[in-house]
Amino acid sequence: MAAKSSISKVISDLRGVTADSFRTPLFIPAWMRGISTFATLVGYFLRDLIRSPWIWFDLLGVLLVQLFFFANTPSRDSFFSVTYVTTLLLSALTTSGIFSRANHAATYPILARRVTKTSFVAAGMLTAWVIGMLTYVLASLLVALRYKLLAADGGPAWLTPGTLVLGSITIAVGAIFAVALLTLLSNFVSSFTVRMITLAVMTISVMAFDPRSFPIENLRSFMARIPPLFAPVIGAIQYAANDQPDTVARASLLTVAAFATTLIGLVW
Picture (cartoon, helix red, strand yellow):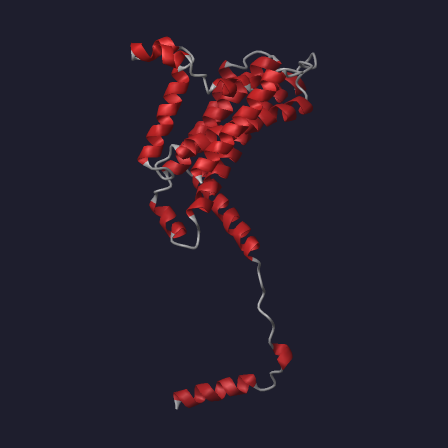
């Protein structure tokens, strides 16, 4: 009797139904679904980072820089040199924090869905880069507030929005390099062999600045012929620090961009 009553109810519900009562389901293109999924992942990383102690390390780093390095009115060279190095370090720290938590139990339901590991890693990298750039924005706003808006003499002439925006190009490229490098060194992304090779290349590149520090004496002459690969990372600062950057500064910035692109390719 219960089955007959259910069938009768369905029949009564279908009375008066016409062809206009049925509509075509909403079609969402695959690229829009991909963007939505990627945005959800970025939002997850941001929420997870805000709830963790890592965000407080970033804020503490910005405040310590303001306290020790910008106690007096900074010059253009000192401001961009300090913020460049600080942003790279904080971007690297944030990347380490994000991917050190990638094997956390909270990520298992995400990886169990139709989310590729590439999308997951890319969302983490974008989040780390955004956080790193926000530390630069915060440092710039604090310096502008202290030494421009509240300054009795009007502040330094170089401290203008245009200068800060132009300098952010160098900061952004350097932050991408730092994020990509730390992502490649993450055990969530790379194998043990890849990480060891990357660390070996980094070690040789650092020792190339001074071959006398190489532990094997017979190979010091060979080390002297190896160019210091990390020199452009430091030289790129001059693109933001100088009002009219020279060819070396431009070449250094392009080299850092090439390094970052190569590292991103290795991550994928």
